[in-house]
Length: 309
Image (cartoon, rainbow, N blue to C red; front, top):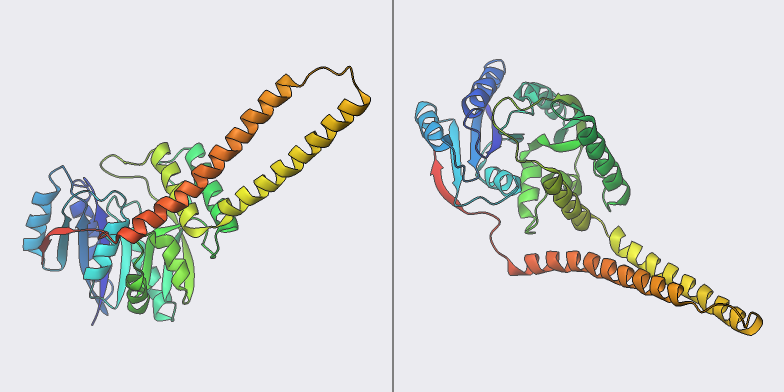
């Protein structure tokens, strides 16, 4: 009997822990050919999650828990820790808030049995999000798909099933700023999307906000696209052309329009424009430099404080 590793990242999900376990267990009762291990990765929760995890781990050895030594920010290090601990023939990644339904796992497995190495969920709709959030998500994924140097599927998050071979290849990637949904596309292999409706959060409060969304959008673009650097070069060329045009215009005015008014407003505007261009260019370059700075430090992406089962 093959084992499927279900990896769930959690932060303050005390209301969802047992519900996720029950739903995963019900799914695998119907899958007679497969057993499961449910690996919770707790990102240093501050609620009563630890007590629930310890009780559950004593009840069922298939429930395994990794406690991070501190909060490592995004779920990416947690997913990575779970993948390194997984022993199954395939790994399924889910978020502990159960917005990604475990009931889709049998559909993932059917595609995997046919030879597809990566089966990922495609969010056809997000419940619990307003029109603005849905429009921003779709707009970002469309932009990323256009400017990234690899083909990244639209509206696909971490929710997916990956064959053991794919997981092994992902674990070989040593970069610090890890982003799974994009690296999953980078490693290749046969991949297929399954559309689903992302459910609204059942319990707890989301930590997502507009600022965190913008931060991750910026991070992903810098990590998987060189286009911002190319845009700087194009902007610089445009400024040179514009400056040359103004230069020749000033010569013309000097030679043929001797009584023309002085160009103090033009000079001020040009100084502000060029200053803005320089600051913008430096900020983009600084983003890429900061990524290099993080990579060369070789700090661990996560530290596990305690393991159960």
